[in-house]
Image 1 (cartoon, each protein chain N blue to C red):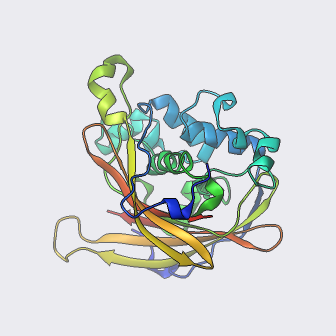
Image 2 (image 1 turned 45 degrees about the vertical axis):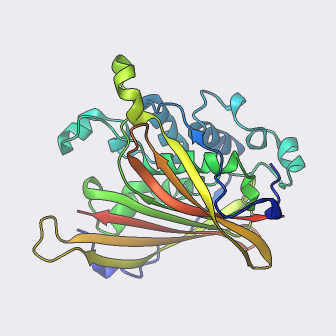
Image 3 (image 1 turned 120 degrees about the vertical axis):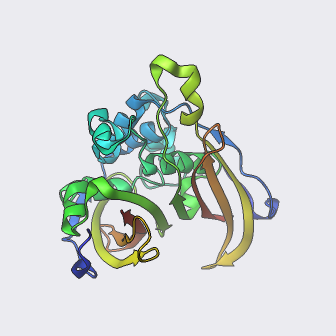
Length: 157
Length: 149
């Protein structure tokens, strides 16, 4: 069961350089392509990205999820840090706000904290309580600009 | 693609996007790309321990497919918000029983313009979005906001 004393907890800061090949790999995965030659040009060709108005190769819309998994010990470290049991965890909501483009070469700092923890459901009912944990993640680029914000909601049964 | 704010009307449908049937190989590829190595998504010796015969797709993979649907219509630099609520689980196709299992693994993304408004000095549209399998089972619902010229 998630440990409610973790409400408000801030995770350590992590910085990660956005790599071109990780963007291409992610773009291939979500477009269900066998290789990175068949993804959209903006995800594999700097010139095509610049012609489309980006400073460099941009990230696909859900790429920021990878910042949480490839830093700070990944999924298990995150669930352990809030005392949640991965085997009982359901990802129920993901909410994104985009303030400025994130591109290859950017150095992104991940600021993540536990912003809410509460029980849901009727006392006494089967499966009660469902424990809800909400994480907020802010991504800040090398110029100190807040470029992206996410709210991630997990439920633990 | 450049779409003009004035050319869009509330009620307009976004182009329907149908993804390829999801395979276990695609789940492994997505795991590597995203870094989400929860064994629930690739290891059936694990899923059987928690009472499930099959692995299931990452919810974020389905959201990624929905993101692909959006950015096949509008360049991703115009995207301002994208939020989803995850509903049903998605089992991949069984390669040894393709015809009978492809429906559950084939995701179609649909959406509709629900609002036109101005915010932060930009002309924006809000669209709802839904991803369903070929049997109509809902995988996620949500909305996205894009700024348009």
